[in-house]
Length: 162
Length: 287
Image: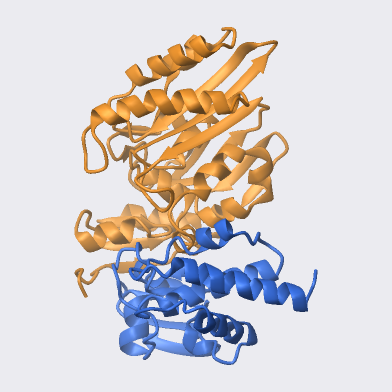
């Protein structure tokens, strides 16, 4: 089957099997390596992508299901100022250890920061922890990820007070 | 790839009628809604399907509507939409609370409320609140439409009252004022986990007496259940700790849990008592 969707801002059209998972199409056919293979059953979050801006796991999503949608991975966010600011905070706060979960972790927290920024959500430590509950980090960087996100939100609040 | 590749056909009907037609005509076809349970089951070989009929984006199955005296939730509404809905927060806080604790953000953005019900896990977390609210399930199929009270929807372990070609269309809940509600989920950790026991309670109290009460539980029987005998006991009784304890004891006897990897039957039964008692207290505003 032929499927077309917007990948990181550009329309792509790709031939897939009906039962093919988005994770496999991205990694094996479209050269997107930031989306990692983990548990393959929706529990670890390493394969997270943004579907129309919302984080989803790409291991429980058929490629045919994303026809006509917007799919975003970190490859598409390099020039996004909010993403760059978040990446900077990840570096400053040592929010990375082995790095396997990082691309997914940063996508989820990017979606979260955007939601907060656009005025939809709270910003407590519990809220940040809740947002990343679907991203498993076996190195245990969670407190540092939360620190990075909280730090960015503080910076945003002081430069753009509500 | 650790799991087997999925060899299935894929259909994306444009209307509900078309979906019913495909389901009726194609042997071995199954409804695909959010896919967070079905795709795992297909990968692991727990279920088989020749073809998937994707109803996830059918307009008539989406959305949350306040209809004045009722609330309507389309079956393919995403769990995250329920968490973020103002109507749900205002009218069905018990449902919101339960759904908020389901899966993870990534899963809630895919999974649907109808999928959670139709997958018919004894541990379905949307079931206790919807049982407590006495939700009506609107079903459409090749022979027209029908309405089933959720209390009669779960017919046995992983079985629901859906005939071949039938699709759960929407969930309708009549509004009613309760004096308090509470939902408690016990799992191995505090989030993104399967229930060991979950309990949902609603209470309506006037002049210190129970006018009505609802108690619904999951993971303690082959299907999610209401503790009818405990509810009946509470009705008309004066509120006291002794009465709550007695109701929780009755609820414990109404369950039939099994031993499994998550907990023993004995532990679950004790937790039914403990959590029902705590949840009733919460519903009364006791802390």
